[in-house]
Image (cartoon, rainbow, N blue to C red):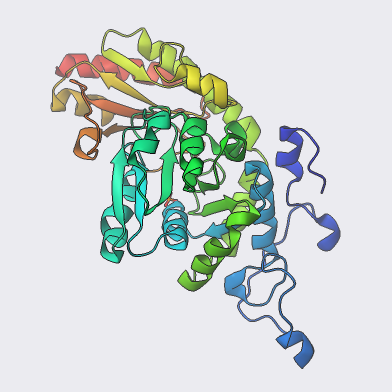
Length: 392
Ligand SMILES: *Cc1c(COP(=O)(O)O)cnc(C)c1O
């Protein structure tokens, strides 16, 4: 398929090869471990390309290859590999590019379990990590040592949504030969094009917006050809194989990514403005808002905002907060996000970060604006604030 169409057209057509699948619109699900070869010569022939030749189920089937082709095209890289979760994609990237004695720089606002990998597995391997302020920009240069191999970014940050100047960080890192990784889950490939802003390796927790229906775990890593080899070796040696049914669900979810994200954005903006108007609210953390400190960077680099944002409340008692959250009609409470449904949970960044101080007096809520009617969601939140006031 050509890659010259507009973004919306590419989301619909990327990775589709109906001529290879009896004309079926969607790539079929291949369940396979053993792949049979007709002759010894075929069995022993080296694969023409690891991401196109089916040789063993673990290394991918046509289901896997079609999905990876689509994600690579939408992120704007050359090659993509799939992983059984977003976190597996992150660990697989670290293990591909870091070895004992190396040093990694990781944003202080990174997804919590990413920090867990750095402080656990990487520390045990003898890889040292420095967490940095996400506002660092080109100042990242001051933290780069001779043994620094990788700068890990995420924008906006998990829980608190601080923006990062990705091009400035990338430029400083590249000047010293350091690889730049980005967790691009929040924006998805639809709202941020990592390779146009200096990123070398782009990660998706496809579990979130790509799958989009809260029913599968999946991760992807997309790279330019220059970074494929080390990534592929680690992926192969770790034995990561994403399940074909989950790949299918992700491929299916991908086709509606643009329309879903447009709606998530619209509803999130409506909810964010409503929160801003409420006396219970201290501030709203969402770079799409003009009042957000990250708005200028977001506007410069991003193509849109997804449905996940934060709300800092004025101080309230734990019981008052529970009275609100325990009784929501439409907002669910649970981890993960990016599905069609709205979610609302308390979050505690002050317990996690080490390089910066989280200085909010009241509790932080993380909101995922789902695809429900915005007026219904606002009514639900309005009743929630009434319960909070009554209990407070
Ligand atoms: C959820 C998430 C991950 C991890 O994805 P899983 O599929 O849950 O392992 C990674 N990064 C970010 C930003 C996430 O929100």
